[in-house]
Length: 542
Image 1: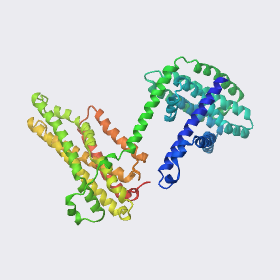
Image 2 (image 1 turned 90 degrees about the vertical axis):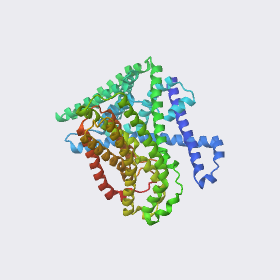
Image 3 (image 1 turned 30 degrees about the vertical axis):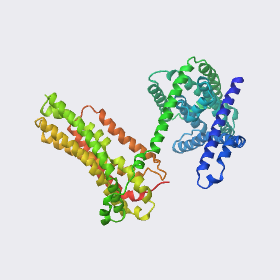
Image 4 (image 1 turned 180 degrees about the horizontal axis):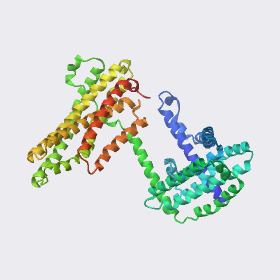
């Protein structure tokens, strides 16, 4: 009884902690609102613990009410799934059976095998110096109890509808207890393995395969009704009750909770730190753009021949050229150091492989070239600076959002980006020519032409890609945040592809040709999309 009391005391303390954080955050943000911030006495509110405690208590009660609502969502989803399946199948499947299969059978497996603590929980444990081992041991039991309590209203309603409250409550409560404890016990042991993530994924995939495979077999055999008979009967209910005791015993008697808790907290803190780092990266993604202070250039008067958005773009690049040239020089200097070192090494240690064999080896440099040109590209830098120093302000004006202005601005920016990226590619190619001449032209003209074609197509790709997704997805908001999840996914995929290209060990001529053709194809299709959709998608988001 004392243990149960401790469980609820822990839960109440944690909810109070979250409510207090919410109130402090609310007071802080009220103080930042321009007009309200001057009226609201934030300093006084921080000191008025009784007021904060009362508001926190109201927030706490509201969170409990909301929890009941949230735990009813699985039953609503089960109702929709059941209705959809029954309309498409000749055999019926009850709401309870769908809820049992999806949320008890499947969700409990995934949730228990991949437990994770929120940042607030970690802070709560550290601030109040709570035993990590005891917290984790109690939390699993507490989560099961909370789930049962918050699901009770929905289970009772289902029992009333089916006219058998006792049976549905017994199955609903004890099936969740048994399966949650079963997967928790498995997780306790697997988490201590070195290959735990792979093993957990394998178990989940196998479990899902067996479950959906069984459902498919029952459907094909026209025996879907067996699901109802097997899941909803008094014998099954008592089996769940009996099974809950041994799994509870196995859970509480696990003798390596200290090692397990340390592993779980290390994993949780790693995920939280990575998440915070990602948020910081997103929040300051435009940091490079912010750092770029564009000063008035002496030759701005040379741009008087331009007008409208073209003048604004020309003015931007004119004032930005000093920074661009500096960064270009740094890139070219780095390339020169690397290539000069390669040439010196080739003279000190002469290359004995000649002809087609050497070219076959050098074709393996093409995937590396993909990654190098991606990293050296000015595309992302351009996008950041364009938004911070131009588009953020100018997108508020109607003339700047006209189709003609957007399309002409895109092409102007593309050619400028291509100009700087092209210099880098041409410089790398120039060093390849020198390398070939110093080594007595051991690379054939056909290889040099293929290399030029690949580098040109990749230069077009990297000059176009960042601008393309910038104009189509426009990921930045008015407060300089990256809010578009699709943009993050596309950006991540593109980086992933460039990184994966480094892992390719053996490629031939066809790889270079294929990459070049795909790049050109992407460019052509992308231009059509820009002309068609950019005037609709390129706008400032709040």
